Image 1 (cartoon, rainbow, N blue to C red):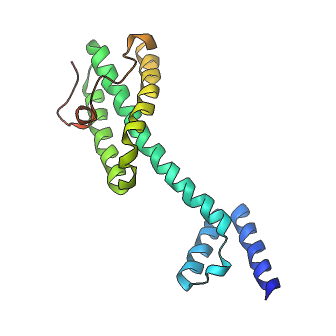
Image 2 (cartoon, rainbow, N blue to C red; image 1 turned 45 degrees about the vertical axis):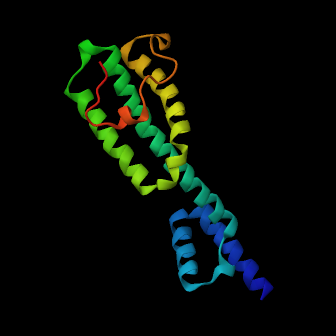
Image 3 (spheres, helix red, strand yellow; image 1 turned 90 degrees about the vertical axis):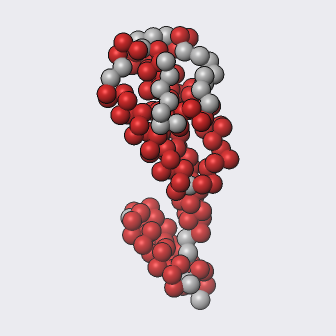
Length: 154
């Protein structure tokens, strides 16, 4: 019995390293059949943690793009156009989709906003030609304003 268990762990490890999709299907089948002792626990833990980090990054990415365009809207008014307006609208929608699908991220929103704003300043500076120092150091808008569909900073 010990040999069989060791052998299945080696097979699971090989599948994980060489065929991630196959490994995920194998792990799902093991879970469905209740064969918990045959699961590749170490790699499952790693993948579940990675999925959580990935969702947090997705939420931050939506905020970065949204804030970047709000900064551009505010600090480069002569270049405002339909494209920026539609990007702002789309990012708000996408942000709320990620948050709806991951309500456990709500307690992390304040830190996400702080982190996203720093990246947004850099991206806005790249695209506008303005200096990073031309933008406020701290996000000038509340979370409610940022996510309000009718808010466009003037």
